[in-house]
Length: 222
Image 1: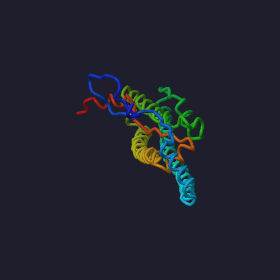
Image 2 (image 1 turned 90 degrees about the vertical axis):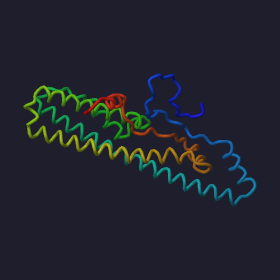
Image 3 (image 1 turned 45 degrees about the horizontal axis):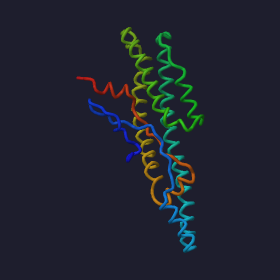
Image 4 (image 1 turned 45 degrees about the vertical axis):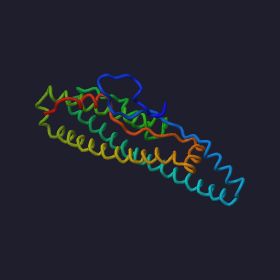
């Protein structure tokens, strides 16, 4: 396959959706990089040392970039956790008429504490989807009991949730920018490729939307 992130492989007659491919591509040192690196050491010692010094600096750079990605991810996690707390408070105000999924908080706490870090990128979008579903449950309950909409505390919860949704959108943009930089630079030839292949780095999965949101976006709103 010419494009390792190709989504155009199955026959589709109704058009195609643009979507993020949840696939992590490993960095592999290509033959040209190996030949260049060996040639620098065999033919000229000083260029070989320069290459190694640059490699050490690039290794430190990627370690810092990893920390930047983790920081951006943590910002999203914090907003997601705050949304769960707000929705839980709203559920209590509705006399516990809504059964909030406790697994969401478990997942948020898990990837914030470093549990199963390899899956962080993949489950972050999934957890955000679950939180959106919880918000939908609360909206359904409010539609059944219109008088509750006037409840001042519930109004505050909904306003806070709306604010946090916007913050999640802004935070995920920052996160995706950092992921884009990472995914682009780890394959840069020759030093970055050598450093990242040796470290076993892979591409990272951007924060993406869900199939449910894509389907809803096709609806008529006005």
